[in-house]
Length: 344
Image (tube, rainbow, N blue to C red; front, side, top):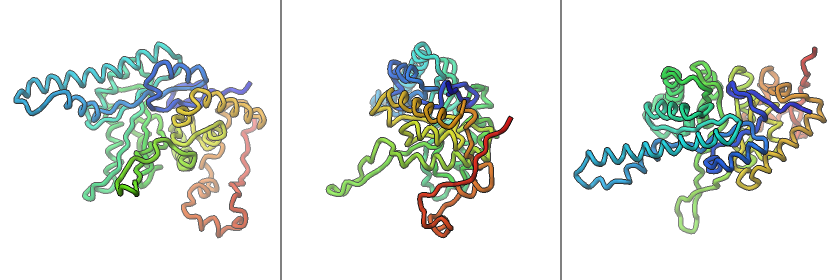
């Protein structure tokens, strides 16, 4: 029997598949089925401070001249929403024996620390910081968005938060490797690659903006794969999970070989539910047995960018760099560097 256990952000997982944050992970019953199917951990549905504040504001007509009443109702509504998330943590912890991560997205410095404490006290085993934002301020200094994320992690650690802390980041940064290294330096235990933004589309008949695809596509997986290998090579002590695009056991295997400690699944769970997890793990076990791997740990990072040749291959940014190479007549060729297992 192969050993599927892995270590992610300091926590031991029974498998490298994580049920990612989604509406599905707001249900203790659904989460239980994912855990029984073999998921190694779960990320609860994200709590958004801005949404809670907006909903609280909507509960009272501010046109009335009773600011004290407005403030009271607003605070009560916010506390009620937070209590609902706290209760979700408690209910899930009572149902499953796998690590449970809370996911938060806050708009204030106080929100990050307050929500982290509330959810940690409720029993969450770790915290995933959902820091998705697209920068559009033309006056913003270069590097300011990165410094803002680093500050969040720094302040959380300085506030006394000691549990596993991972940061779910987008791909919209100028130097992701430097950002991941700096996050690790100030106390992040892991990163999630990548946070998927809202996708817009255009309705040509009405000539208006509309919502684009909600679910990820298999092609979304490859940016996460590339940067997982690069981050693993540059920041070996930082845990990495790939989010977006993973559909099956082959994707899990690819991610682990590139250096991921875990692979997050969400979109595929809406269609195949817990069956997606069991089938993927069966595929992983079958491949590992065929290729004589005894454990996930043994194969993790085998293709990470720890050697110059692999790093160069992963850093290719233009097709012409490839098609000008001796392999130009075989565009499906893959990296052919020998991967030797440690002896002894």
